Image (cartoon, rainbow, N blue to C red):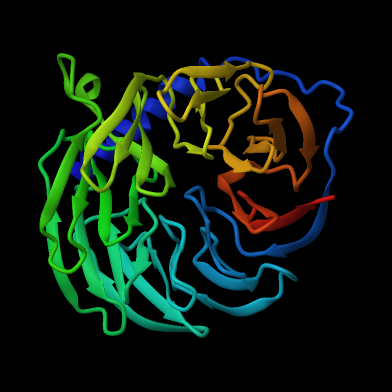
Length: 368
């Protein structure tokens, strides 16, 4: 029932926003201040909007919305293996360097390795968050706010844990990651630390609490991707707050009001995100104080950002990847793709920047 309500909410939100969306800011002439050379492009398969790629060492697992999952060599873009999940996908690929896992629109968790489907498991609800593949296990966060662990070799279910929350959820990726020997997941407005072996809850950190007089106003959800540096995890609660949490103790380090709809990234100095109206913004990593914000890319349908050395990369709905200065957000370069929206968040593999388009083409650039 919760999954059904979540779908209804997404439809209503889309209907309301489609008729009132402001005109995107026009791109101004730009003299690049930093060079980035396109080194390869690989067709994966279109239709996806979840974070489509996961990088481990020199391999990238890419998932197309049409059901294709490919593992490629980051250096050359050449296929290491490629296989179909047999149905359209609702998530990107989780990957540990060997095993990849995705969730299909038939609510199937599909595990793959070496170009073959290893096992399938039927889920009780749909998922929008990439599975996490770690420690020879596959962890799944479904839309009914249940976290489940499966044996990576056999697909046997090991444990399942849930936390009650508000009846509505967002149809977009949430928070699921490993921090040392702790599994960390976003459940409603809380960040929760689990023992990955047993599923027991080790700590809970409240990021946002429900407010309002109806289910839509009271909805709180943590949205991905999160930003992790060491034991600290920074997350956004949809349109409400931004917070950083000590994932060893489960304590909130700082929390500030923030009106954004997508996840965050960062480095040892800043946390980067996109605020309402598509305004790239930076906060001080130490205390959450706002460092800069600008509106030169307003209403261009920006992705979550990715920190890339002295720049921050964001994609837009017209297929551009913009490189901004990490110090003040000024525009430094603009990278073209096939003209379809950038799907999910760009990714970083060493010194290679990766971005997939909604048409299913995976692009790779390297700074010059």
